Length: 291
Image (cartoon, one colour):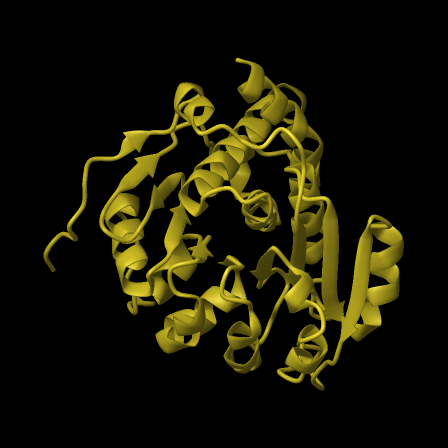
């Protein structure tokens, strides 16, 4: 298969990020949708990550049985319960509840903790057309699998979409789920073109048209469970602050990686937890801003 049209990756460095100045004051509302019966904590990780980057209002939408508990765990958030299917997945009928929340959002994150690909696809089919035309969307986890199987689902948010796949999810987005993703740059560029989205894949950020950036500060410890939920929330929080999607994705990826670096002396590469990244992110952002 021919290589996708692409430029050579631009290194993501602290100096580059400082050229893309972040707002000094927080702003914006983030809506995070996910949290099926078996994975309510994913929404917690994404939501707190969004607040850590400067979003000032957080809305969390999760399976009904977890809404009260999550509201106590994240008292900073408005928490809404969503209807469930018999197997504990968030139901497609959740779109009816979310219709009241989406108009107030400045960024929407969908996917953390969702568990049923078919139900997730049906939910996206109903939900994404409701997102106002100026509001960016981040898709993660099972939402990526649904879009990989049915690319037209994301059509209502083309041009304002950010995808945050791991390598398994990237293979689905490429339409080749049985073929391992080996070249992260080529894969990210192809996904960006295929889905008209900014893509963050294993430290590589690509946008439609072939421009690509690469961050070399990540490490194996960031493969810990829940780390991707944190990254999706960081992107959503920056988008809610009206940061350009490419810049938001590069900033989020670098902050995520540097937070992991800060933990290594205390946890090693294999002992860190995703929740520990959350406390490091504000410190990383302060250091990056002041130089």
